[in-house]
Length: 310
Length: 269
Image (cartoon, rainbow over all chains, first blue to last red; front, side, top):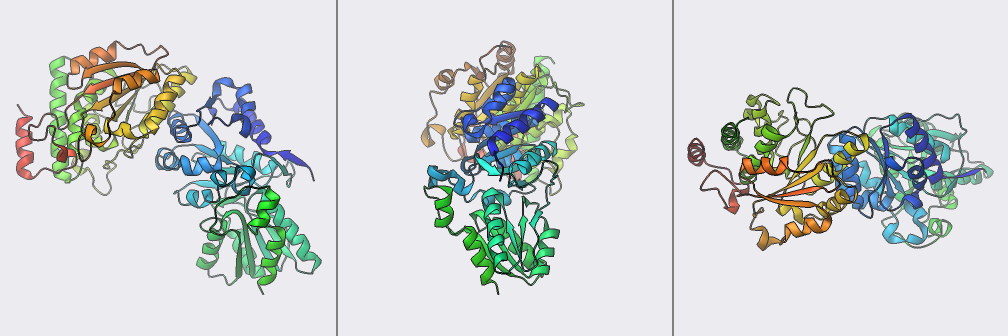
């Protein structure tokens, strides 16, 4: 399968946008090389702002830039974007109804050898409770480019989660995306696997393949937009299959699993339900392959969860 | 405006603050009275701003980082004509935009502040935007002295100097008191001037209750240069009302009817 480096796509898309829109500015906190935004800084040195190792101030500065009419995209590791700069993002950006795009890189297990200090499993839960915030986790390079463009055009704050390294290309260049819209990557009438982000969507596709060999046909839904959630699609598949498994590279509390469970219960849909994700644990050091096994979020775990819903 | 007119405006703003807080039975008396002369100098004497065009992209910006001084800001904005003074009568009302900490819903308010340590970073962003867009407006941010115990202020100070924001002025309302006690007893911030100098600021000290001195300092700064400015304004918390001046409990005490009447009488002289 074709792969592309996510951070390269992020930077290329911002460079294209900056050519079209003079208000686009890009901030980072000493991680321009790590996050790929160094390429933007090279193309537009006057519109790239390195705030040094001071993430809270970076988001406060981004809010000020927004108040004066700029469209700031601020990136840093997702652990800092959420935990370190939360008060600034909550108050200066969101409560003030400004227009700040915050991009958290290395979400969950993709922080790999940086381990527990740098491994954000909690960012989705933290961000979901910010009123009016739009939250997306693109699953591949095409959807990443699409959502960066949507974020730039959207008047309001956006939080986006993104691995830095190469990810499988799942969508063709002509695919279009929208906030609040999921994508059905694989049809199936026996169960619905709802996954968020590149790691989990790829595991979910592998799980569906394994289940198909046993005669169980699971649909795979790429959630993409955690907030707003695509209730129409999710509830339709919950009703038609009666079996839902959510998959996220994050704490199951408050993230995708929580959101889908709330939606299904509130809609009065009777469906068997299981969550794949991090169960109240801190991060550890390791490869992605090691960590997904360690936390029980592999294709095999997803398939087992589907089988258990009988 | 002549000096005596500015001083009259400051006195009227102080009377409005006392009346507004007493009526609403909420607010921060000491912090609001302490900042009045600074706000008067800025809004009535120095800043390029027009209440009829509060969104003018070329306007000078003022950010009240010490957001608990909102009544001082609201009364200054109302007297300056940003909104009708009758709106002050509904301060803290359920449908009023005039909340205890200011938000951008109120004309003339640039940022949502009140949780301390946010406004300085916001001001760096606003000033940076001016520099990047080639606009000549100036950005003024007023912090409390106790507020400078929040570490983000020093991240912002570092960034202001690094980005060479000569168009940015941080004014410290240096009234030496915070919520419960003196700043000195709570968490020492001195030597403040030397701290700002070390961060790369051009630093001036001023009597924060002398509108003339404030205007002199504001008028003498180089806004086109590369060094950001810090004005340490020496003030008295509760300034203008004898029994509130320098008394920590007036940080957020609400005057009784009799106390409010006495305060208004003192401020009418």
